[in-house]
Length: 320
Image (tube, rainbow, N blue to C red; front, side, top):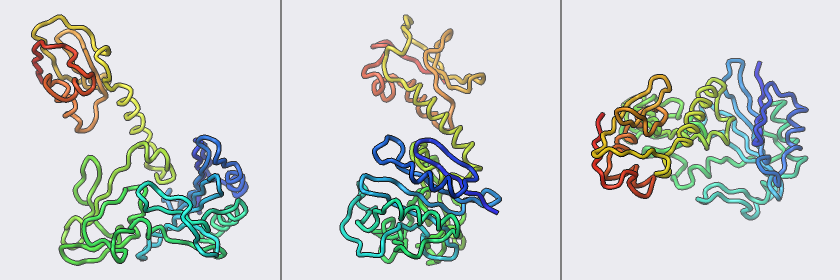
């Protein structure tokens, strides 16, 4: 047993989606309406494992369809773009860096999109009446022979790295991404290592909140609660950024002694004098350097954020 979930750019979502909802969703897309030009149909197992998805986007010229199906044991990404069975034609759309292209035969009519997604829903397969171009060619355009001979960098959720093959530069082993083992974790990503010699082979970049907000289908149901917390933290962090000296209180002391402290009741780090808080921000993981900079009167946060030091030429004595 498995479930189909629908997600729309306009913010709507449907769990346990039936086929009529899918077909109505396609027809509701509008390239000329803000935040309503794409939808994703995702399939999940009974254990909430993400099995694959189809996504379609409306453009002024027609529709684009891409399908992701995991193919364990294959050297293919299992990420495909649909096209009519005719010559590709000219490039209609192209990403800024030039790697991702859409050709004339890949801009489809509504009836064609409906047929593709209905077939995908009923059979969980690519429709045989259409051509399917592997997006692997776009992702690895600059890599010879579609292989990775050095440490590669891909996105953790948005690039289908599990079904790509990677070569270890140290021992020569050849493995699927899913066969690599977890290596060292960093603030911005995690390494995946060779299972034989433990040499780092792949670096997976953690996407930003903004990137994942546009692709909710990439998150498993078990990840969505954590993502919601992360989104809330980023919103609070951005709302509390220091942008002007007018945000800070006037201080008459000279010299000024500032303390860097934590408020366990609000889960925030504060900068304060002996008797008043002058600035606070949410407490995060290993971003203490921001507050070290904020307490440094000579460089970084104060001048960069405010354009001038908020307390003029008076001496500021930071104490941890």
